Amino acid sequence: MARTCDKCGRGYYKALSRSHSNIKTIKRQHLNLQSKVVEGKRLRVCTSCIKTLAKVAA
Image (cartoon, rainbow, N blue to C red; front, side, top):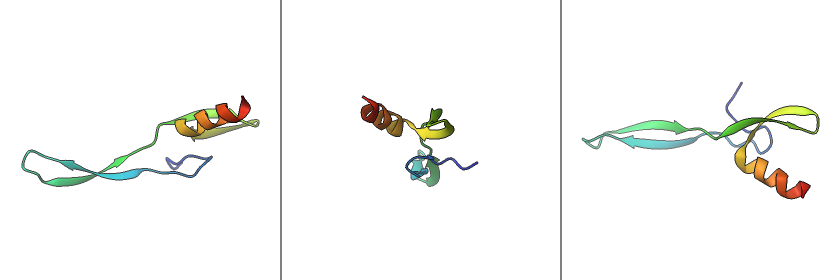
């Protein structure tokens, strides 16, 4: 299963890790995914989508 949000489709970001000698290494910054039941289906949703769902419900 891919590490993407099932609601908005966002994935990971590429970033650079710098060592003391300034050598760059590409690293991935993954989303904060949580499993949540939305409309009767269990989805892996990022936390920003969970906050948006709470705003729509209220």
